[in-house]
Amino acid sequence: MGEQTKTKPPVRLKALLRERHWQTYRTFSAEYDKAARKVDPSLVGRGPSRAQLHRWISGDVKGLPYPDHCRVLEKMFPGWTAEQLFERVDDEQDAHQGVAAPAGPTAATAALPVDAAVATAPIRIRPYVEAAFDREHVAIDFFGFSGETLHGVIQEPLDKIRAGQLKPRSLTLRILVPDVSKPMPVPCRSDDLGDDPEFRQRTSRIMLRHGQAILDSVEELADLGIVDSATAEIRVQDCPPLFKLYIVNNEEVFFGFYPIRQHVVQIKGTPHPMFDLMGKEASLFRHTVHDGSAVGAQYVAQARQWFNTVWETISREITG
Image 1 (cartoon, rainbow, N blue to C red):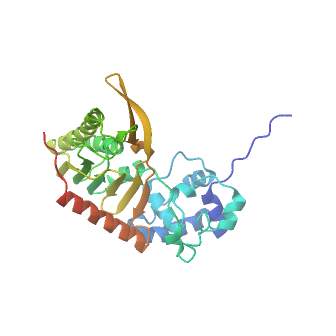
Image 2: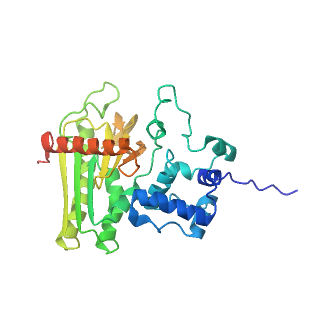
């Protein structure tokens, strides 16, 4: 006898649609437009095609849909993130969970409304940043360690602007990184928690490489007149960068803590055992003014206020 083909479990979106009796294309489209009208009226009528919806509910997609689709889906299913909606999970489990959080509320959160008690799953920031460049005016603020991941997520949109594929009128980037010319509590030597000047010099080279690449790309856009206004500025400050923060178009905030790991770095052939900040391992969580909750709008407002106070008070231009 041949091997029996295993049936893949459905994505959560399919189970939730069936639970609400929204599984027909006409009904789904009507509900999609209702949610889109609350998120952004310009998104009404721009839902997925019939074939695209089929790919969604069958799980035959790579990654997530475009960010605008994700925003509308999250409005349609409060308490679920786009990432959770496209997870493959047990059908019976979904049917009984309804629109509640995947994990039941603890005693401390049982009395909270669903949108306040649900923990948002970590997300990938790249599609959200790329979508931000579709706007007429693009503004991104970043607080973090080296700026390496920032460079990674914005370089492609910057290249698309240069190629004429994206056409914002203005672009503003503000980048806050630590002053690595001075000793810091972390990164530090793992044996005695002391400062390692050679490691800081290495970090400085990484920061300058990625930071300068960003500045050069933005400056080129301005010099070529591709955008009406394009500015990028990097400032340093003395706070330990224990977390990273992105503020995108003053409407979305992505926040994550840097895990601290011990690893050995080879510098000039010499091992340097360090406790270091692992930026690529940071899990980012999204907060937005578009989620319909007061919490999201307040979080974004406080993040903007905090960034501005650091920028305007204790940060300074890089010298030397």
